[in-house]
Image 1 (cartoon, rainbow, N blue to C red):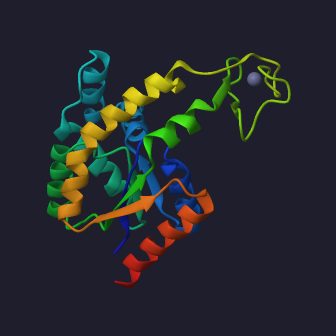
Image 2: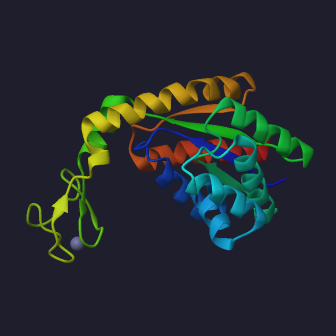
Length: 219
Ligand SMILES: [Zn+2]
């Protein structure tokens, strides 16, 4: 049976990095919900057209429709294992996903929750800078441009995005916690949840992730 995982974690928790590393080392396919939706819209499929209608009118895409798109993507991945990223976001979505998976004889093997204190996230994201011309990314602490405020690659202006300002990040985190608390409880009650201390070095986090995934295979 292929390994099917869900990655949860607030923005800035490094779950994207861990997903990429696990894809490389374990051959899993990452299904990022945003990307899956964009691909479906771009492909102009029947379901993609429905999604596009909601997106264009600025409305929320209904849970059942999102789940349908995700399940179609899971089906395409076939027998390779996968990592769901960005979905489900709410308990009703989790229930809808579980029903669809069960109907197809599939299951989620584990949910990895990448945990990091808000203050650490705010500090990490607060250090992000980006070139307003070419999009190159920098960090004031770990990867500053050679000349402050000037892009190494193109000489463009290096700025802090509005989304990365502490108050904005704090708001995003509050929304995230409120939305995902029931989801955490849902997976915890089903014995699928693995809490991961994501504030450690990425290499250490990777070891923990790998241990959990290898343990699933042995079970
Ligand atoms: Zn640049």
